[in-house]
Length: 394
Image 1: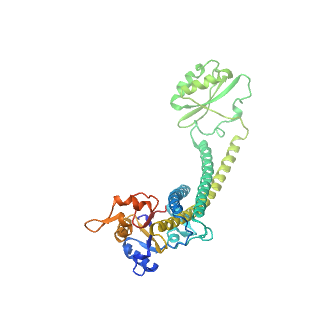
Image 2: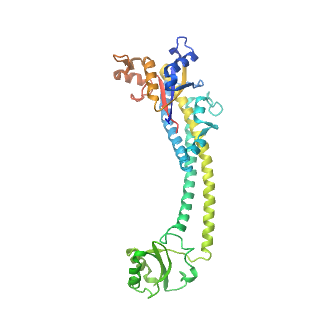
Image 3: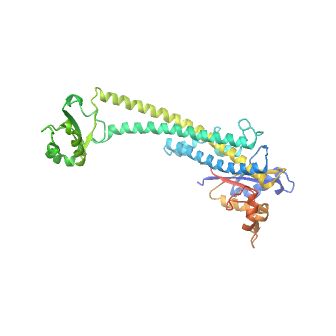
């Protein structure tokens, strides 16, 4: 199934003979046609227009902010994907805006006049949206750092109970009463080693002479699995560091252990605590991602709406008389839909667009810089003869 793609298109009402908005929208629909996309009205309020210099700066600010909003929406979508382990059906259930699918929210978009009062200066609205998207990004990042830390702690605890003898916890394997406690002797210390089974014979032959003051015949086997055998060896403390160093050279793995009463029971309780904490933080992260996704999409669409308005003023001038449409298409049909728009409305580009011998619109690069200056220096490759933005919401 092709991925949905959206166009936001703003055109002067002069594209219709009557200069009427409804007829202009009908004209836009006739250019796109249902074979290439579905067009719905995208209603914009009348914003407070400032100076030309301010509009040019706002166009630049909104372009950057739109990119930032898109990045945050992508991050939250990735977070949902991670939480739900890539289950696309479950992910889709979480990706809603005002409890509606994103496509439905877009096709029936209304500017949120309560949250973003249209009578405020555009610069203030931009500032509000910048702060909101930054707050969403910060909240999601903070919660996922917490979740990842909890998940890592749980994974470490689980791994310590299920790995081989070189890495798993010794609490359920070693009986501390059968060993020499670390502070039980002033001179001697007992070390636990995980020796690969292929090296056990070599170990038994050489451990006593590995360094001075290893207690003869002190090695005792504690446990064995498919890969390692666990031994305890007694060494005089003053040679412990040297002994451990030489064990590592031999690929015998020293294991640290703590002499604690009820170690296994404490470990079980800690694992249970971590499992409960992980489930709790997972639920919090999922709820926050759901609301964060909705808020980020709404903020982005409001930024796009502002961007269309500012660009419309810069392109078509005052008094404003334009129609804005949202075109839903997909990756397979978008190229044809865009081509139809270019063919129908290239004349709006003035000197920046001409026609080739077959009547197809072409860019006149020599005139492009003049046309671009009126819209804040947009990239020539992205310049169109009319107000146009293409976007996808993941």
